[in-house]
Amino acid sequence: METHQLWNASFLNQIIDTMADGLFTLDAKGKITSWNNAMERISGYSAQDAVGKGCGLLECSQCYGKTCPADMNRCGVMKHGKTEAKKCFVRHKDGYDVPVIKNARLAKNEDGQILGVVETITDLTELNAMKEQIDETRAQLRTSFRLGNIIGKSPAMQNVFAAIRAASKSRANILIQGESGTGKELVAGAIHYKGFSSERPMVIVNCSALSETLLESELFGHVKGAFTGAHKDRKGRFEEADKGSIFLDEIGELTPYMQIKLLRVLQEREIERVGDSAKHKIDIRVIAATHQNLYELVAKGTFREDLYYRLKVFPVNVPPLRDRREDIPLLINHFIKKGNQRESKNIKGVSSDALNKLVNYSFPGNIRELENAIEHAFVICDSNKISLNDLPVEIISNIKSRSMAENKTASIASRFSTAMMTQNLTKEALTKLLEECDWNKAKVARRIGKSRTSVWKYMKKWDIPLQP
Image (cartoon, rainbow, N blue to C red):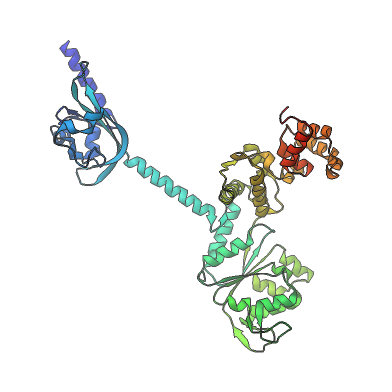
């Protein structure tokens, strides 16, 4: 019997010594009676160093009280019977802190007499290191997926990011080309604010928004009396951008006269205010943008070839959203965060079918259209997730990806369109449409061009139940 008990004790000790967690025991007087191999590794104290000492040698940062009590009976674990697992630090023999999870429990025999205390120590050093590595990786991914306010992880956008970084280190003229809504102004801002002139102004002018006369005055300024209404001298946008950057959006809309004026600015780096003969030197970097193909305009003779080459010293091509579909989920999350802040909502994301529809939609309006779609969904969505029915009708009924069911619904909408447009909607027509739309009031509202509240009012008026 004694041999069997000794064998069991030996086997138990071997089990304890193979544990990854540190384990030690205290007697009723608070003296350490056992100390496994993991405790030696975690604390630096050998069993010979620890056995017979108090647990105060670990200098735990979260023990009951600021210091270990001299009397074991005053120890919190004696009073409470156990401690909850908690993160803290223990002091290594070499003097540095080790992050751990510490747990303690009072041990009693069958008669309820106190045998001592069992404590376990879980070393968090490697776990914390992994967490830091994960946090660092996430930070790197966030950095690589966005540059300023530009978001993207696709190869196409990585090329844009590389171009922005290169352009920001130079004072060369930049020509940004891309479809409307692709974020050309954001690219221009990133180039400016990451560059040498980031502390200087970036002046923005839309060349398509003003007539030739007004645009000339806006860019070059004027002197008093230059034209009717010129009551005093005024600096132009070129002078305001001195030592900084000027962003000329929709550069393809310049008239031949303004093209010549801009070419002189790029060649001479000086301007003349309207009505003045004095020249003013300027030091600016010109960033131009257009949704048009300037090379084709040059071939047609509507854009000066010499100006074209002056502008495209360093070209940056911004891809349309349909060529960077893997960026759509990132952009959706970004717009949802903006929407939550703006509308004080707590929308978590989009449903799988809505995401699939968004990712496969062509987005002729590019990022601007995607943002508008999410804003539209915020108006309609009444849950914590945007559903397919919350999206604009042009996305839901995308002809290229329209399913048979959607075709059927579109056909039904067409059948009732005349009645809807003339406001002669009948109870029978509305009931039929509700059935075909699975009683989704928001979807019906979009079909008839009215609000969801209007649908409810019609249903109440005609005693149509909210659900079948």
